[in-house]
Image (cartoon, rainbow, N blue to C red; front, side, top):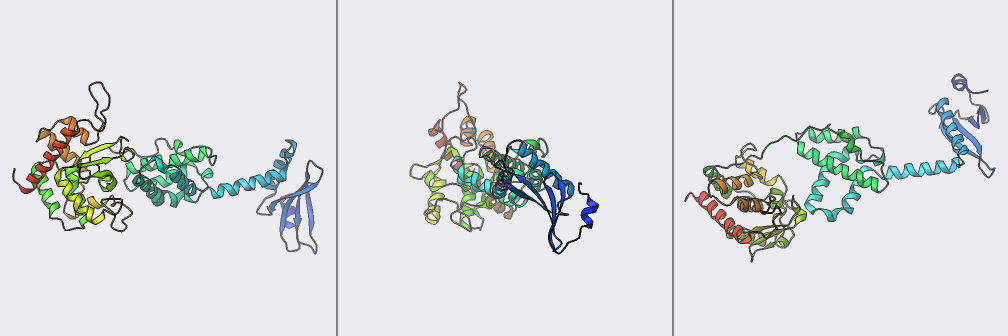
Length: 398
């Protein structure tokens, strides 16, 4: 006769173990200690009798035990060995537990490191370490659901870092697609997030574009009493007007000071094209001074804590804040807008040359992108005129 819950609850231990049978090989074994364990006996294809354990009662209810029994019988009807199936499932669970999101993410970063600059790799790692790993890092990647990824991304979004939120979502998606290709996950769950994240607000970096105010800013920079590395980066930023991330990640191997060129590899560029920045004499002078300080390492503008890393992304903006320039007035990225506006509207420089120097995509009359050496002599002259003009602004000799 099949068992029932009332009967099971009232079952008492005896001097010796005994069994209560439910049918189909399922039984409850009651031990003298009072423990009750679900078991099932069955015969393998060879005829040998075997047993499986389903767990203790009442943690495993009668209905759950019957469900597991039915699963075993279904395996037998399909010609499978239930014991081997259980061993396979256990091995799969163990493998899944080892392949956590953090483990897979670190493996992805390592396997794909040749595809991105070291500064980009470190930025992605820091994003994951700070906001993603604390939420889903310890979870088996195969078990992670869209809602759990969204919870992690909300940590970034709640800080108002909307663009970073979308960048991190993109990186998390790449980890999942790597896991799918490695047969560690079934799908990229970030695809299910759809429009769950807030859009990136359309706006511009704050910048000073009035020549008189730009002169005051330059005087503040040259009067700044911060760390020598920061001072040098501040002085060179308006001269070269490259993206702040490129400035702080400048490497000595990219510089030819005798030739007056900074050649940035495409792996570091937003458009992924190699970029040449002609260096005015003022910039060369600053870089030669820096060479005496950091020339033995990889980076020109090294971090304050470690010379193995480049300057922090917050250093320039923090210096501007300490000089009294709020984020609503001037940012490190704003040096680009300053140069773009003044060189065009005040100095009358050719717009295509300015765009080349900003590393924007510029096309020739046939619609093809110019190569990196296009108009290099003219750009070299323009960059020197710009540096000279900045000196005059600073010294008020216009």
